[in-house]
Image (cartoon, rainbow, N blue to C red):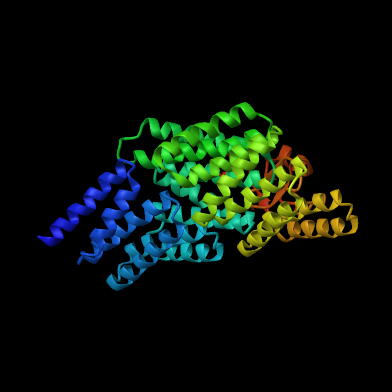
Amino acid sequence: MGQRMTRRQVEEGLNLYEEKNYDAAIKKWTISLQKMKSNRLRFSTLGHLAAASRDRGRNKDYLVYAVQQIDIAHELDDNNLRAQAYLTLARANEMLADYFKAVSYARSTLQYSPPGGSIQGYAVLTMADSYIGLCNFSKVVECLDKALIISHENVDHLMEVQVLSTMGKVYLALKDFSKAHAYQRRALEMALSNAAFNDGQNVNVTSKFVRLTKLKLATPLRLMGDFENANKYVEEAMGAASSLGDRPVQAKCLVCIGDIQRSQNNNEVACKKYEAAIQMLQDMNDRYSYTLAMIGLVKAFLALNTQKQTANEILATALSTSTSMGNKLLQARCHLLNERMLKLDHQLEEARRVLDTAQRLYQEADLLCSVCKTSMGMQPDRIQILPCTHMFHERCIMDLLQKWTHQAQPCPKCNQNVLFSRSYIALLCS
């Protein structure tokens, strides 16, 4: 009788979760967990708790539940449960910006899951997001290519949405804003189409991806100067996130709104948005977005020509955080911002030293075009990624691209013959 009541409490928690009453669902599952005798029921309930904690931005709780799932999977000696638990563990570490751990746990997911299944696709997607954090873009593209194939084989449209969106993040990091926009636009179109034909069973998941893709589309639009549409998409994402209590998306929307306001010289408004976002992101232990918000706040302070000491302190924290994550591009952005501040203070020798450090970080991230020998991602430019995953300025390999449609051409970096006709993620929006 007691276990029947416990199962009923789990179902009640699921109903509360579907009604967007996340905190009540978490409370219901936490109470029922204390009475459970079935390890399999404990495993699934911990999965519910992990998902709800993720949606509320409780990333450390998300990690704790994943670790408890691993213990149960090992106790039951069940490889399917191991694969699920390792995937949750990988995702939790990626969200906490522990990228090396995330990659390691994603590899464990691949080891214990059936080849070609959806769980393998989500594992390589997690690896792709982690490699973005580590600025290993060749590995990102390699993982996305695998995930795209798996999404097609399993007819998993939500996985394909994530593949497109992550590729958009790659081009955004490389400052090819038109391609970043193309990928995020396609991701949103697919997310909206999937939501329109949803059977009702995964409505929470599909609506979440609509919010996320709208938010992600706003950034390239802003950087391309289309403030009207950037505002439109981020406000729609913010409205949906606020109504559903989606704190992670709310916080990221605040950063994006701050960026838009700063780009329109509304720097006092931008500062307020950044400050609100920083508090939320710090509470959620989202170090990556937290660093972006701090960089935006420093830029707004510089534009206002105010709080120089505070700006210096915030920038130092941003640099320290990006260094602890191992993200070379965020470190480089901090150094480039520091260079601006040093120039304003007429510390020209120190500014040159800081610029050299930033350029070295771009080279360490393998973002040196092997044709023209200059960095990619420091300035807006058109970037082309070949199927061998090597990247170049598009203008530097124009002759190769023009011949590509007729016959295989050698990559200027590895000399491997590459074919245009290959089903390849980096070519989808080219």
